[in-house]
Length: 157
Image (cartoon, rainbow, N blue to C red):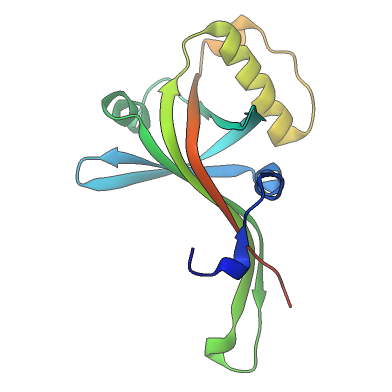
Protein backbone atom coordinates (compact mmCIF):
# COMPACT_ATOMS: atom_id res chain seq x y z
CA UNK A 1 0.00 0.00 0.00
CA UNK A 2 1.45 3.32 -1.08
CA UNK A 3 0.16 5.31 1.91
CA UNK A 4 1.17 3.17 4.89
CA UNK A 5 0.00 5.95 7.23
CA UNK A 6 -3.59 5.26 6.09
CA UNK A 7 -3.42 1.47 6.16
CA UNK A 8 -5.60 -0.33 8.69
CA UNK A 9 -3.48 -3.30 9.71
CA UNK A 10 -5.47 -4.88 12.51
CA UNK A 11 -8.42 -7.15 11.81
CA UNK A 12 -10.56 -5.45 14.47
CA UNK A 13 -10.10 -2.13 12.66
CA UNK A 14 -11.10 -3.65 9.33
CA UNK A 15 -14.12 -5.39 10.89
CA UNK A 16 -15.15 -2.04 12.40
CA UNK A 17 -15.15 -0.54 8.90
CA UNK A 18 -17.17 -3.48 7.53
CA UNK A 19 -19.68 -3.08 10.39
CA UNK A 20 -20.43 0.48 9.21
CA UNK A 21 -20.80 -0.34 5.50
CA UNK A 22 -24.15 -1.24 3.98
CA UNK A 23 -23.14 -1.83 0.33
CA UNK A 24 -20.48 -4.11 -1.07
CA UNK A 25 -19.28 -3.64 -4.65
CA UNK A 26 -18.21 -6.90 -6.25
CA UNK A 27 -16.21 -7.27 -9.44
CA UNK A 28 -16.59 -10.41 -11.51
CA UNK A 29 -14.79 -11.62 -14.60
CA UNK A 30 -16.65 -10.95 -17.85
CA UNK A 31 -14.16 -12.01 -20.48
CA UNK A 32 -11.83 -9.15 -21.23
CA UNK A 33 -13.56 -6.62 -18.95
CA UNK A 34 -14.58 -6.77 -15.30
CA UNK A 35 -18.25 -6.45 -14.35
CA UNK A 36 -19.01 -4.52 -11.15
CA UNK A 37 -22.24 -4.49 -9.19
CA UNK A 38 -23.27 -2.96 -5.85
CA UNK A 39 -25.03 -5.32 -3.44
CA UNK A 40 -26.44 -5.45 0.07
CA UNK A 41 -24.38 -7.74 2.25
CA UNK A 42 -23.67 -9.25 5.63
CA UNK A 43 -20.64 -11.05 6.94
CA UNK A 44 -19.23 -13.30 9.58
CA UNK A 45 -15.66 -13.43 10.84
CA UNK A 46 -14.81 -16.64 12.65
CA UNK A 47 -11.56 -18.55 13.12
CA UNK A 48 -9.60 -15.93 11.15
CA UNK A 49 -11.90 -16.35 8.12
CA UNK A 50 -14.01 -13.56 6.62
CA UNK A 51 -17.12 -14.71 4.77
CA UNK A 52 -19.40 -12.24 2.98
CA UNK A 53 -23.02 -13.04 2.12
CA UNK A 54 -24.83 -11.23 -0.69
CA UNK A 55 -28.53 -11.15 -1.53
CA UNK A 56 -29.35 -11.74 -5.20
CA UNK A 57 -32.17 -12.32 -7.62
CA UNK A 58 -32.52 -15.89 -8.91
CA UNK A 59 -31.24 -15.00 -12.37
CA UNK A 60 -29.13 -12.40 -14.10
CA UNK A 61 -25.74 -11.51 -15.45
CA UNK A 62 -23.79 -11.81 -12.18
CA UNK A 63 -25.02 -15.35 -11.62
CA UNK A 64 -24.17 -16.28 -15.21
CA UNK A 65 -20.66 -14.90 -14.71
CA UNK A 66 -20.17 -16.64 -11.36
CA UNK A 67 -21.10 -19.97 -12.88
CA UNK A 68 -18.22 -19.48 -15.36
CA UNK A 69 -15.62 -18.09 -12.94
CA UNK A 70 -15.90 -17.88 -9.15
CA UNK A 71 -13.07 -15.33 -8.67
CA UNK A 72 -14.31 -12.00 -7.27
CA UNK A 73 -12.92 -8.81 -5.85
CA UNK A 74 -14.90 -6.61 -3.50
CA UNK A 75 -14.85 -3.08 -2.08
CA UNK A 76 -16.90 -1.35 0.60
CA UNK A 77 -16.55 2.12 2.09
CA UNK A 78 -18.19 4.73 4.31
CA UNK A 79 -17.47 7.90 6.33
CA UNK A 80 -17.14 10.22 3.33
CA UNK A 81 -16.40 13.90 3.79
CA UNK A 82 -14.64 16.50 1.67
CA UNK A 83 -11.72 18.14 3.48
CA UNK A 84 -11.41 21.68 2.09
CA UNK A 85 -8.12 23.52 1.70
CA UNK A 86 -6.86 26.93 0.60
CA UNK A 87 -6.03 25.78 -2.93
CA UNK A 88 -7.41 23.12 -5.26
CA UNK A 89 -4.68 20.48 -5.13
CA UNK A 90 -4.61 20.50 -1.32
CA UNK A 91 -8.24 19.36 -0.98
CA UNK A 92 -8.62 15.85 0.39
CA UNK A 93 -11.29 13.37 1.32
CA UNK A 94 -12.08 11.49 4.52
CA UNK A 95 -13.07 7.83 4.10
CA UNK A 96 -12.74 4.32 5.43
CA UNK A 97 -12.64 1.31 3.09
CA UNK A 98 -11.96 -2.39 2.87
CA UNK A 99 -11.00 -4.19 -0.34
CA UNK A 100 -10.30 -7.84 -0.94
CA UNK A 101 -10.68 -10.89 -3.08
CA UNK A 102 -11.91 -14.42 -2.83
CA UNK A 103 -14.08 -17.11 -4.35
CA UNK A 104 -17.84 -16.79 -4.61
CA UNK A 105 -20.40 -19.56 -4.66
CA UNK A 106 -24.16 -19.76 -4.87
CA UNK A 107 -25.44 -21.34 -1.65
CA UNK A 108 -27.77 -24.29 -2.21
CA UNK A 109 -28.13 -25.55 1.38
CA UNK A 110 -31.43 -24.22 2.76
CA UNK A 111 -30.21 -24.03 6.37
CA UNK A 112 -27.16 -22.01 5.33
CA UNK A 113 -29.36 -19.72 3.23
CA UNK A 114 -31.64 -19.14 6.23
CA UNK A 115 -28.69 -18.24 8.47
CA UNK A 116 -27.29 -15.94 5.77
CA UNK A 117 -30.64 -14.17 5.33
CA UNK A 118 -30.87 -13.65 9.09
CA UNK A 119 -27.35 -12.16 9.07
CA UNK A 120 -28.27 -9.92 6.12
CA UNK A 121 -31.34 -8.58 7.86
CA UNK A 122 -29.40 -7.99 11.09
CA UNK A 123 -26.57 -6.17 9.31
CA UNK A 124 -28.86 -4.04 7.17
CA UNK A 125 -31.52 -3.18 9.78
CA UNK A 126 -29.94 -3.82 13.18
CA UNK A 127 -32.92 -6.03 14.03
CA UNK A 128 -33.20 -9.78 14.49
CA UNK A 129 -35.49 -11.69 12.14
CA UNK A 130 -36.41 -15.36 12.11
CA UNK A 131 -36.35 -16.63 8.55
CA UNK A 132 -37.98 -19.80 7.26
CA UNK A 133 -37.27 -22.10 4.33
CA UNK A 134 -40.04 -20.43 2.30
CA UNK A 135 -38.10 -17.13 2.44
CA UNK A 136 -35.21 -18.74 0.55
CA UNK A 137 -37.28 -19.74 -2.48
CA UNK A 138 -37.35 -16.35 -4.22
CA UNK A 139 -33.68 -15.38 -3.73
CA UNK A 140 -30.17 -16.60 -4.21
CA UNK A 141 -27.56 -16.10 -1.54
CA UNK A 142 -23.98 -15.68 -2.66
CA UNK A 143 -21.10 -16.53 -0.35
CA UNK A 144 -17.65 -15.03 -0.78
CA UNK A 145 -14.94 -16.91 1.06
CA UNK A 146 -12.35 -14.17 1.38
CA UNK A 147 -8.73 -15.05 0.73
CA UNK A 148 -7.26 -11.61 1.33
CA UNK A 149 -8.51 -8.20 2.50
CA UNK A 150 -7.00 -4.88 3.48
CA UNK A 151 -8.26 -1.70 5.05
CA UNK A 152 -7.55 1.97 4.54
CA UNK A 153 -8.74 5.03 6.44
CA UNK A 154 -8.19 8.76 6.00
CA UNK A 155 -9.02 10.82 9.06
CA UNK A 156 -9.92 14.47 9.00
CA UNK A 157 -7.13 16.64 10.39
